[in-house]
Image 1 (cartoon, rainbow, N blue to C red):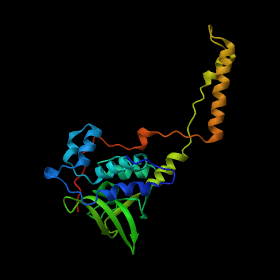
Image 2: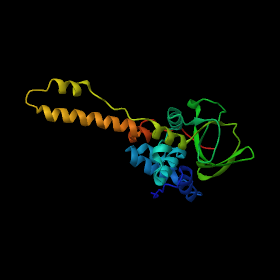
Image 3: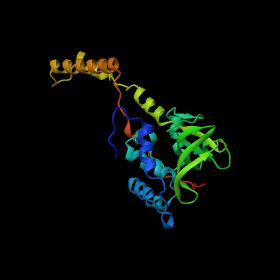
Image 4: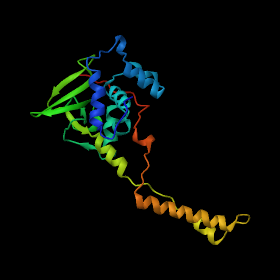
Length: 231
């Protein structure tokens, strides 16, 4: 996994890992190292030889240390929905965005069946890096937007996660205990505990302290069988 610096961006970290894998070819039986990694991650062997466009991205995000912002999925519609839930879904391409395709030309997330990473946007075309394309390859592609459903923006996921304030549960019983101390408790200790709790809450509110909810932010998808994807 890459060591990240404060100056690194999600795009730079992710593309550094992704470009190193260009030219990778699927092994016989549709096996890939990305599917093997994802199967181990999810404890589900079905992924070892499953379509691997999104599992490659999950692997690359893990290697780059940006899984919290990119997600770890095998099922492309769920991955797109995750970006939508994080207010990170758009119809405007940019480098580092994940681009989601529906080969039938639809515009509904439910119809998505392939995903890649935008490397650059030039002359009305999106230059991508995609896995499981041309049947077996991980390679660069140049595409128009006729089959694009939308884009997921990891940078926007990071913004969402770092600007959501922490909710502090100030229980009424903590205050009640001061006025009516429980038998057997030291009233002085009870008061001190309540004051400490209120001071902590005030500190949290004043400083804007945030807690990263890793379990929800990584977006690991375990149960849904991945849809066939290639182009």
